[in-house]
Structure formats: C-alpha cells, structure tokens
Image (cartoon, rainbow, N blue to C red; front, top):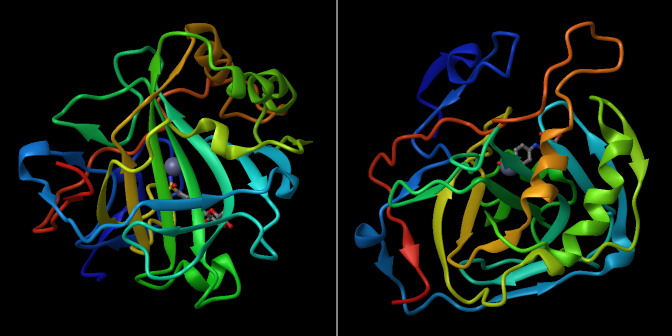
Amino acid sequence: ACSSKLLLSQVHPMWQEPLAIPGGDRQSPIDIVVRKSVFDPQLKPLKVQYDPRTCQQIWNNGYSFLVEYNDTTDKSTLKGGPLEDQFRLCQFHFHWGENNTWGSEHSIDRHLYPAELHLVHWNSDKYSLFEEAVIEDNGLAVIAVFLKVGKRHEGLQKLVDALPAVRHKDSVVEFTKFDPACLLPENIDDYWTYAGSLTTPPLTEAVTWMVMKQHIEVSHDQLAVFRSLLFTSAEEQQQRSMVNNFRVQQALKGRTVRSSFT
Ligand code: BO1
Ligand code: ZN
C-alpha cells in the first residue's frame, strides 16, 4: 500500500523531525460524505467487552494523553461489526481544537466536532503484540466517537480530574479501574467503517476505522482541562498548549465508506 514518500514535516507542523513515511492509498482521517456512503446489511453490531481492571495509567506523550490498558491478555476486547477477528484494547486518547469550531480528525459532510475520542485495539487472534499487528493490513481497529459541547459528562470527569498530573509531555500517572465503555454513545450499532491508517506516526495503513454516528456530550469546562495540557516538557522554556492535535484530512482515493444503518 506504500507508494510515494513524503516529508513528515509537510504533513503536520506538530511533528518536528523530518522523516520519510508511507503516503499511501488508505490514509486517515477523511471527510465522510453521507450520501456517498454505502449501507451494508451484512455489517454486524459491535461487541465491546471492556474490563476496567485492565486500566493502568495516563501518559502525556507530547501529542495527546493516552489512557493505557494492560493488553497482555484478552480481557478488554472488541469484535463484531466489520471485524472478522477479536481485537484487544491497548489505549484510548483524544484529539481536540483550541476552540469549539474544530478539533475532530474525521468530519461528517464537512462538519467538524470540537473533539474526537479514539479507542485503539489490535488483532489478538492473528498477532501477539501491537508492534506485530501495526504492520499488517488487518492489524488494528479504532473506534472513533465525536465529542460535542453540552452537558457535563459524568464518566469523563474522573479522567478530567486526573489530567493536571500529566500536564507536561512525558509525565505519567497511575490511573486504574476506568471503564472505557462509559465514553461510548448509547447506540453503538450505527457507525461508518472504512480502511485507513494511524493518524500520527508511523501512519501505518493497518486500521479498520469505525466512526460512531452518535456523539457524546461533554462540558466546555471539561474540554478546557484538555486544552490546559502542554505539548512541551517541564524543561522546555517556551510552553505550548496542547490544542489542535489533529491531522489534516486525507484523500479518499477510491475507497468506499460503508454504513451499518440506513
Ligand atoms: S490513532 O488512533 O490513529 N490517532 C493512533 C495513532 C498512533 C498510534 C496509535 C493510534 N500509535 C501507537 C504507537 C505505538 C503504541 C501504540 C499503542 O500506539 O506507534 O508505539 O504502542 O499505544
Ligand atoms: Zn487518534
């Protein structure tokens, strides 16, 4: 799937060192054009089974904060939907904007949301580590959920309360017993799916994307705490707010987006 090479610094200003990456035919994120998506009655409901006891820590990695799960066994899993195999949850994270006008990576008929959640899973039927799965066409599965500003999200608040401890890049804090299912919308049966890539380096074309039709609501204050995080480490002079940590949209290049609903 890797055809041309391009400079990473041309892809996103956040990624500073120039580095060759695959600029292939199935990059993410994309704009989903609803009237061009194709209903697929074969698409099954998604089956998520998450065990809050696999939640381990929060890490500011300098592009987002990751809530990381123990993925050494099949305790928190995803199957069904467009997937043939079982996938294991390794982390979730968000992308967001400096204001509520933009911030999501995907868009629906060009409509951007203020933020987007990504629940990242790897194929544990076929591979034994994320690093093995990430180089395979069918190695990864990411659930995307849009966030809209509205009423406070009770489930998210426990996470928001922990964020000041990981304000700087490279900080890590213990974070346990968090059920990621609380961040899913009520209806997870309606989604769009397409073949794409990771949206940050290594940008590998290994991802089956499932973009939820229903969004979740979070308060302006909760998003403000996301925006109070920093891209920079404690040692750096010029502190930079962690905002606008999304990738520019990529060409569809002949791909079909399927929908599970009419
Ligand atoms: S995303 O969901 O497409 N925005 C995305 C982008 C990059 C990663 C994951 C999801 N990166 C990988 C790292 C690995 C790490 C893994 C799980 O995330 O390349 O080193 O093990 O945290
Ligand atoms: Zn992401």
